[in-house]
Image 1: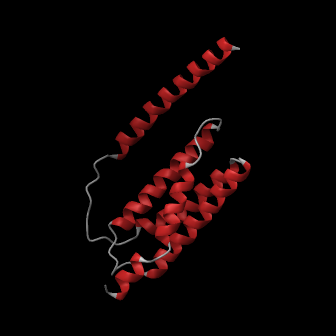
Image 2: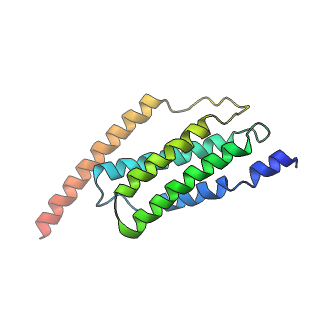
Length: 151
């Protein structure tokens, strides 16, 4: 394996992304404010986006400093998520979301020799998210009604 490919494959950004993804899966959305749920959803989408960009990146054309910058931002976001898990302060989710912005910018600039055709258009995703939020709100309302009936 050539040096650049080896450097790309063994870079710490991959581990940091895996750790962030695992941390985002450990806490459910119950008992969180709407803003906190939105931030968790955004962080999950951002993590998936960054991973997908790295999956199609050209190891030969991706500079190490770009990977370093992505890793630094992902680790900062992970630190905020870990703080959130330790003290349930939902402000850490907003901070994590802010940190991930830099990683998104750097990941978007990663050079790929592939040009993927997105199977899901942005407007479809937004429409689905709105529908899902309505269903979730309805289910929460029904759960609260059942809870009140039982009490």
